[in-house]
Image (tube, rainbow, N blue to C red):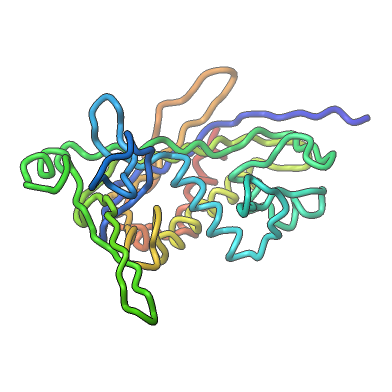
Length: 272
């Protein structure tokens, strides 16, 4: 039996602001049923009552987009009607390494054991101070949010069934969003391999900008873009962290060139 090992060499952090180009709906639990109440409220911080973007929603969307782009088989049932890709054997893990290697997998799923922890941590994303102030001063339908009326129309009688959707208005900015990518190197991997794998996270964010975040995106919700994008790195040597170093930055994601970024990251960690 071979010995499993994993070594943490450092971390790469992507920080950015998320600007809403259209209204955003990420659902939260309704406080109670009442006449005229909201059909679909947004999630809010219970301490501040401010809407936020859960890290789980952002990470799940990024992973889902990568699974669709690479045609990863939906092998794991989360709940009724919801499936995701979880590799079931070593060959499948390697074929979809850019997904499971970044976003993680389940321990001992179908007897598949992976020697490294999940590399990606996605933080919750609050409103920026500027957007919080702007929304507080606006006469929005609810604190920080708007109500969008929708209706299902009967195709024969034209009878309408209206409903109310709560959204964070277009133009709002959340941030800083922070994705923390840990450079765990396991059996059969090199540090250079794991650094290059960070390019998959960059790739996933580019797909997000062409898609949507949250619910009901096919009806206009959730178009977003990243701005003020920064990439930081930090080496871990002999139990000591180096200072957090800015490796690259750009006003928008397309201006942050992926190939150039990966070269700079390789150079930074090779200098240890």
